[in-house]
Image (tube, rainbow, N blue to C red):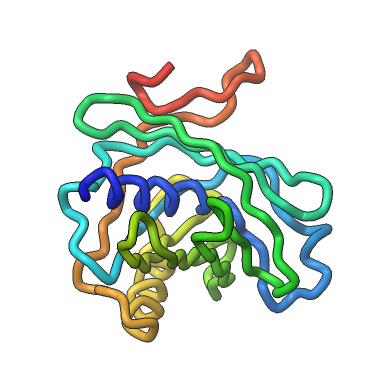
Length: 186
């Protein structure tokens, strides 16, 4: 059961880079590439034992056809975890499918510049999950974006009282062009 929840949390971490405006019907050409940072997470369930010690930046590469390859790393209980997946573009703007269609990700651009909410829902091993993440281009926390995220979480039936703000534990691209992961990761 804990592995299922960890997988769900990992999935949510993977989708944080799909930062595009779901109302823009031509968003395919605007799908971002590069590095984003997770600034807040909440869920419809308690997930305290699944919280990572720190998270690294998430990288995304736009693929032909509008799908996105997302890679991230995080440290949990002193161990590095690296995850990578492809988010498949759907006909619906701002909506992607992951893990063979078992997870739906809806991307909503926030009023605060360069911030998005990624709401993920699906089922893993018979357990339904629903969670949202606040994502931004800058690793620094933004109080206005966090307040907007709290309201959106309440509006969507998520637990705004238990928003988790992860510790940023990594850097962006290294000088040699390779990504630097969370401290302690390869």
